[in-house]
Length: 429
Image 1 (spheres, rainbow, N blue to C red):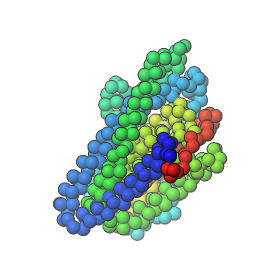
Image 2: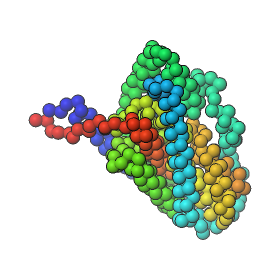
Image 3: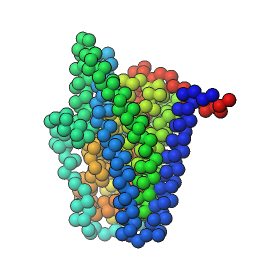
Image 4: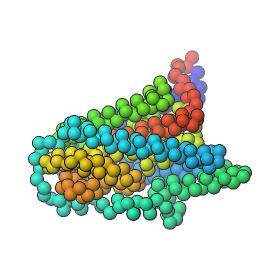
């Protein structure tokens, strides 16, 4: 007979099949709507479908703030004093900085190798239209640094300011760890909040296939399958670059945790697929946390590294910024010196750290970079049409990058245990 573990494994497989079916069905329905309706009708249909995705993402955002706060406080509080917190923090940030440099460099090298914008021969006009598309004022260094500290944790949670919640949670967790008895009532409360929020996450995730279907159907209905063909060189080049980044991440993971690296990628495939399908790393946060713990990474490491990763370790998004910026320069026939390109990498190292919680964040970073180097801001219009398709890839990559970071830091700290068994589904007898 099927026991609870067998039933759970079967349900996970069924959920994966539902997600894949939703992706294929969304593309098919979107194509039918695109072919049978005029532009206005297709836009109206897409608007109706977007209600489903908006509701789903609002449900996810409802979960994120209390879950990040509770898990991070709990994870830090269980560490053995300030020395361990500092040690884990240094190792985590060291990995994040290294991963950022690697991601940005891969984007730089791949865009030079593939040259997706060469030959487009665009002229510099319509700059005002592109400049109005995004707000670049968010990404000044002063605003970023002052934005780190919340004026009110209630306000930060209300606005889902993940970076501010992380800073406050680190203070609270460190203070709890410094108290002699570790404030058992507070610690028990945050652990209970974590359990409750993960249960709510389970309820919300049952609607994920419906949201995935609606998101893809909406995009294809308004833009059609031609949106992929028209930008094949750019989109294809970017996804090839992502494949290179994935290979580097897999290699780095194998270097530090050994042959289990491939099993890590298998363990987080569902969260990565969810992030890819919804173009939202946040949507996959709870499931990523669960998958990493099942893989064997200790809860305290996952609870510390993963929230920080969502603010400081957006590998896919950072690689996209260099790739897209230089694509625009190529499209306008503008040659940037190597000195300018190295300066661009350093600039993106800073500005990309403020991405979390900012709408259309990659576009904002790219627009700020274009303005800094006096590149045609009208080039932003080149990537607006396919930004959602590209966001899918970079969101999935962000999940993979943060998962690798958590596993490696867990290994360094001696807190990477054996994975929980995944029993095969057997037939009832």
